[in-house]
Each structure stands twice: as structure tokens, then as C-alpha cells.
Length: 405
Ligand SMILES: Cc1ncc(COP(=O)(O)O)c(C=O)c1O
Image: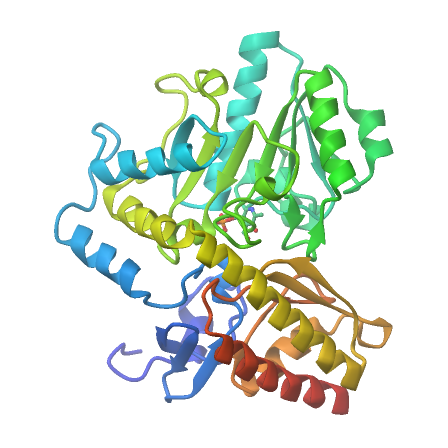
């Protein structure tokens, strides 16, 4: 096989580990919320690289930061700090409840750090035995062995040998179940304020208040996984800002780099102290190149204009999806918040979310699924309103195609 000939989807099956099933289309270029494939076909992007491309593709501010830092300094390792990391950590501290930042490269890594910190904090402060991590059914926290075990889908963590112990799963939004389980042996309660991969399921305000109160009562930490909800996706910098609850630890990734890998764990000084020198680390975490891009993302995103724009776009998308449903009767519900939206299939279309995604591709629209019954939309936070309108036209054609099957 030669790499000089046109690269094809068939080669994926020849040379890549078969843990993904990518679509037949191979995109080669993107600009804003439009993407082009090898043959010049154009797509509107309602997927945003799974809630990552918060400023679309090749946003000038991010390209500028990448080029500028790319010609200065890429990597040092953590034996030295660097200016972009210091600037980004300061921005995150200024903008949130947090007083300390740990940088990583992916959501799973940030969550791994959060879980290890919570365990170490409990051990240092309260002694052995306070190890229980309470998490929730359908939660998704990443694919390292600890995070996938804390995630709420056993299918993702089974089959790899003995799992990390001390993890309890409860139904999401069930205050009584939480009250019955939490105790002085609980070290942390971890949740997504709005479950993304699990099917676009919002935490109720009452549930969040109960999580906070019960954690406080039992000296447990509250960890918010904002890997998908963070960096403006719900119309505020972080989802917790739209609630009455402040977590002890927050993880952020995906949109923080707008497409460049970077993640962070945010916490307070009192908790952070327990990650002493040598207790945890990462070769690449906090490298100057990633942090320079993170700085550019925050400078653009963390503004009232962008957050107001998210709310306006949310309404356009919601109205458009409801209109399509009026015509074709395929959805039971349109749910979600900001630009993390889900169209939930009704009884007649159970299990067919992927069919809508595939039909979308054939009509020039990129979307996502969240389980077998939810079509998920996570476009750029600044997607032009005309692209939302055109994307909805294409999605309507995809719905018509599936409905006619
Ligand atoms: C809520 C949440 N946490 C963690 C992750 C894992 O992030 P990563 O794939 O960057 O490790 C994801 C990814 O989808 C996520 O949605």
C-alpha cells in the first residue's frame, strides 16, 4: 500500500485498530462551520468535533495563536513552567471559583487527576476507609480504567480485568437514592451537570442542591465533569454558573483548546495542597503550544456577546427542530441547553439515531448521536445563523429520507 495514492476509508480497516467505525467521508478542510471532503463535497458542521470546535474550524484567533506560539516554543516538560500556562491558569482562576489549576491533555486525564486528588485528600484528612466514589448511571467520564469505571456504562469497563474498587453507581437525579447511599465513607460525588454522552440529560436544580448538601454533611467532595458542558457550551463559561451549586473540583477539556488537545482540573487551594510534588503528573500537560491556544479560546469565548449568541442560536435550533417534528413526527422531545441539544426519537424510531446521522451526511450535514435514541447537536458557539438555517434544511431532508424508509 502506498501513501502517495489517494488515501481511502478502506485503508482505515487495513491499518487502524478497529475500535471506531468512522463514516465513509474523509474531510480535508474546514472553515467556520463548513467542512469539505476529498471530493470537494461541502458539509455543515452541527457536530463540532464532539463539542470541541467551539469557534468552528480554523478560527483566525486560534490559527494566529498557533502560528505565533508555534514559532516560539512548543514544549518544555514540567521541569520548567512557561508563560502561556501561567497566563491561562490565571485566566481560569480569575473567571471561576477555582484558586488552583492542573493541566492535562484530555478530558479523561483531567478526570483521572480529579479522582486521584479526591482519594488522596480524603486519605490525608480523614484516614483510610473514606474511599467511596459515588457516580451515576449513564455518566461518561473518559476511557482510562479509573474514569471508565466511574462512568455509568459497565459495557465500557467490563472485560479488562479487575476494576478500581470503591465506585458506586446510582440513578441520576434520584435524591432518595443518593440520601440512602452517601455516608462518612463517601470521598466524592462525581457528575456531569448535564449528561452528554448518556443522552442529553440535565441535572435538576433540586438534585444538584442535594448533592452539595449531602457532600457537605459527610465531608465528601463534589466533582463536576464539565468536559462537555464547559467553555460556553450552555451559554455561560461553565454550567455550574447557571446553578446555585459550586463544585470543589471541576474538569474542563474539549472546547478549552477549540480542537487542540488540552484539559484542566480546577480546584481550591485547600484541596490542591494534597497533590504534593511527585503525586501526579503529565509530560505534555500545560505545554506552551496548547496553553497559547487555550488563552486565545478563552479570550474570544468568555464574553457576554458569545454567551448571548449561544442562547440565540439555541432558540433557532430548537425552533427549527420542533418545526421539523411538526411535519414528520419523529421526536418525543427536544432537550438540552445552550448548544448541547438532543432530539429524542419517539417510540416508532427507537434505536435508529445512527440512521439519521448517516442520512444527514448524505444530505451534507454533520451531526452526532448520544446513545441509540438521541440525535445530538453540538455546533460551534459562533456558527453563523445562516448556517443554522441551511443545516436545518439539510437535516429536514435527512429526516424525510429516514421517515420514507
Ligand atoms: C463529560 C465527559 N467527560 C469526559 C470525556 C472524555 O474526554 P476525552 O475524550 O477528551 O478523554 C468526555 C468525552 O466525550 C465527556 O463528554
